[in-house]
Amino acid sequence: MKNSKILFDDFIKEITLPESRDEITALAYLVFEAQFDLSRTDILLGKSIPADAFTTSKLSQIAQRINDHEPVQYILGKSLFYGRYFFVNPSVLIPRPETEELVHLILSTHAKDERQLNILDIGTGSGCIPITLNLEHKHAKVSAIDISDQALATARRNAEWLNAVVNFMQCDILHEQPVLSDLDIVVSNPPYIAYEEKSAMHSNVVDHEPHLALFVDDKNPLLFYDVITDKSKLMLKTNGSLWFEINERFGKEVAQCMQRAGFVDVNIHKDASGKDRFVSGLFIDPQQ
Image 1 (cartoon, rainbow, N blue to C red):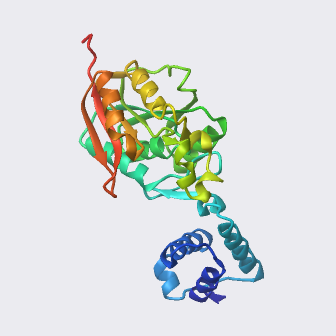
Image 2 (cartoon, rainbow, N blue to C red):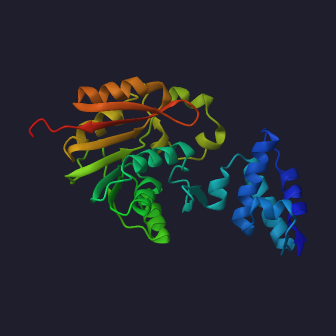
Image 3 (cartoon, rainbow, N blue to C red):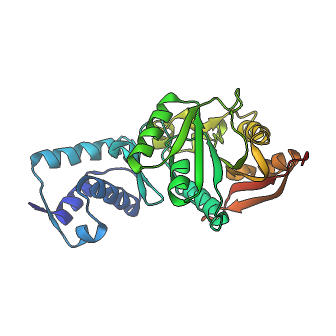
């Protein structure tokens, strides 16, 4: 048995990333929670844990991978989202806190709905959006699509692990129309980072996370928003809503895209950092 606080401090000393002490400590807490099921309080109190030579060797290997700028979520194979752990790997993006905010906005908007909500998530990745909506709203009937078979395999594994019911389908949204209709909600966190922004990004993101889910052509940064907005009109029922996570640079442009397509009550929502991060709007069917 070994004092977890001593082991924790030794682990932090092995991390040589050029980050603040607070950031490195936060990474270390993630590792110790995943590896030893320890809370911060457990560590601060020095709770004793089994720790042999194999354990310390494994911790050193994890520290080295962190020093090589590999995301800790990929090292651990899981990431926390909305209070649940999701399996992640390099075929899917690591779920972000901003996407938790998007899910929370949707749930808050529909908190009092007692009718069935038919929902589609476009570009689902790990499945964190549709799975969370299914588990958090008792009337949510959720489907999700992605172009990547590997991403869909990860999403299905997460749904099974978390006992969620989601209909996952392979679909290239740029070239195919999902065969769905009468939807109450379409939500998407599509690729929205222009390649010209790549040089300003951290290497742990650029070198490890899937570019297919991150980047869009510099010449057409609104490509996915234009396509998804148009295709959503064929799937949403009247008064159905479309929700996007966006690049903070393009809030007004995404809102205008939706307005041109006939969506009403279009709103730009800020994230916890005060940046334009989400856009929502209602579809009114002109034929009704």
